[in-house]
Amino acid sequence: MLLLDPVSARAFFADQVELWAAQNITHETNLLRLSKNVDPASVGAQQLGDTYNTTKLGVSADIPVSLQHFLAAYTWQYTRYDTYSNLNFRGHLASLDWAWMVDHRFYGTLGANDSRGLASFSNIQRNAQDLVTTRTAYASGNWKATPSWRGSTRLEWGKSEHSDELRSVNDIETVSGELALAYVTREENTVAAVARAERGKRPSTIGPGPIPIDNTYRQTAVGATTAWAFTPHSRLDGSVFFVHRGYDADTRRNFSGLTGRALYTWMPTVKITVVSAIYRDIGPAEDVTTSFVLATGAYVRPKWDITEKIALQANVEYDRWEYRGDPILGGTFTHRLRTYGASIAYRPTRKSVVNAGYNREVRVSDLFTGDYEAGIFFVEGRLGF
Image 1 (cartoon, rainbow, N blue to C red):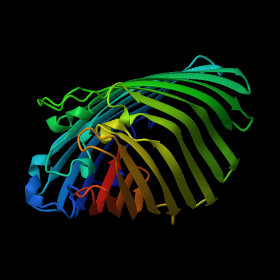
Image 2 (image 1 turned 135 degrees about the vertical axis):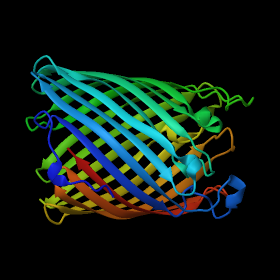
Image 3 (image 1 turned 180 degrees about the horizontal axis):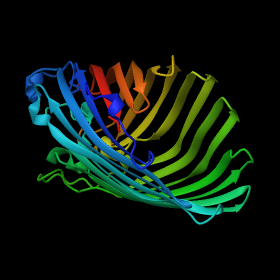
Image 4 (image 1 turned 90 degrees about the vertical axis):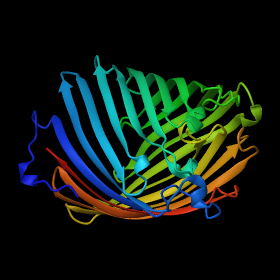
C-alpha cells in the first residue's frame, strides 16, 4: 500500500494539472490460465499461482483555452512478480486529445494514444512474456447543420505489435473511416444512421518460421446508433450493424451478419447505479489469435455508494467467443467464460482512494486444453497531488 500523507496533497495550476502515484498488490491463483489437462512443467511453469506488485506514477492535464479543450496524460508503471521474475516489465500509457471547436456548429476531436503492457495469458497459456505496444491516432468532425440534424465523420489509424515472436502473427495495422447522420432532440437524445469501412493487415509469417498466414481483411458496416435518456434515472446507449468482413486468404473466416450492443444505465436512487449490457461483436484482433472471433455476452455491474467515502461494486459477466477457421489449430471452437467479483473503495480525501476486491474466472472450452479457473485478489491505493 502506498503510504503518503493526504494532507500534503496540493493541486497544481488551479486543479488543471495533477500528479499522482499508485501501488497495487495482486495475487492470482492461476497466473498463466493453465488448463487442468496441462502439466505446468510442460509450459515452463514452476507453480500455478503468484503474487505481483505494480507501481504507477502519472501526470494528467485538463486545460481549456477559449473554445478549445486540451487533455493529456502519461502513466509509467513497473510490475514485479514474486516467482515469475522473467515476466517483470515496465509499461506506459500516454494520451493526447484536442477537443476543437470553431463555434456551436463545427467541432470535433484530434488525438493519439500510445501504450505498452503485458498481454493477457488467457490466449497464451504458457510462461512467456508478451508485451503489446499499441498506437492509435484519430480525427473527428461534427457539423450541426440545424438544431435537429448533425453530420459527423471520423478517421482512425491503429497499430499493435507483440514482443513474443510466436504471437507476432497477431500484429495488426488498421485504417478505418466512419460517416454518420444523427437526429438530435431538444433533450440531446440522438438516433444516427452510420456507415463504416475498415482495412486490416497483419504479418504473413509467425516469427522466423516459414508458416504463411495472410491476415489481410476488408470490413464494411451499415447500421444505426442511439443515445437516449428516458428519464433522469435511466439511459440507453445502443447500436446495431450489418457487418461484412472478407479475408484475402482462408475465406473460412469470412463473416456476414448482425452485430450490436445495448448498454442500459439505471439509477434508482442517488446512491445506487446499475449498468447492464448485452453485445454481439467481432473480437479484437490484437487480443485473440489469427482466426476470426465472434464474441457475444452480457454483464451486470451494480454500484452502491454507501457513504460519501465508501462504495461497493459487483460484477457478473458471461462471454462466449467463437473462433472460426483458425489456421493454426484448425476448425472452429468456442470458449465460454464466466466472471464474477466484488470490490470496495474507500476515499479518505478527494484525491486519494484505497480499493480492494476479488474476481473469479471460469472458462470452459471445446479445446481439450482451453479451459481454466482463476481467482484474483487485489489491494491498491492511489494518491493525487
